[in-house]
Image 1 (cartoon, rainbow, N blue to C red):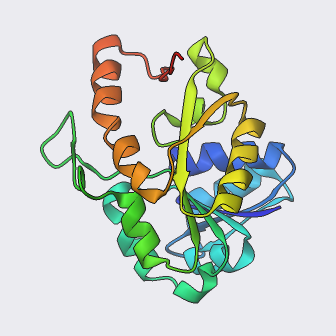
Image 2 (image 1 turned 30 degrees about the horizontal axis):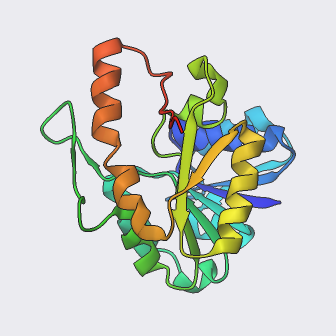
Length: 214
């Protein structure tokens, strides 16, 4: 498949590299076509990897991973032609974290709204699915790093898009996946970040996940 990664940080780099290893064609998008991090990522990942602007990447792809920092996610999307997202699945892994007062960060949006919902509002003709935001990037693509079989959640308004995302999650190694319903489920998923961060700070271990026992 043709897949876009929006964002050149650790999350985008890690997910993009995993997708290349799964034989997908991946374009990494950034604010400029000459982004040095994106160039370096392409050099490491071979002929199935490419890079361009955010707009280039969205036009190229059938599936888009939204891997930008939460505080800039909406600003990034507002600068891309909304029509380029039409009928495409957008996997939102970003979190609305505010680090302006240091650690631990607070949530910019919470309780009665979510970043996932705001993304869907900006992209009304796209199929936004929230997932993978509750673990660090290495666990996203290799859940066995937790030394267990953690649970992953997803939510979104389009059932076909969620089936597609579930298949990608399984390709990443996730066996226990729970569908939380429509995109408003992103509220609960994003509010899991404060407890994840507190656990990380207490244990100094980023290879952690949640497990639902039932």
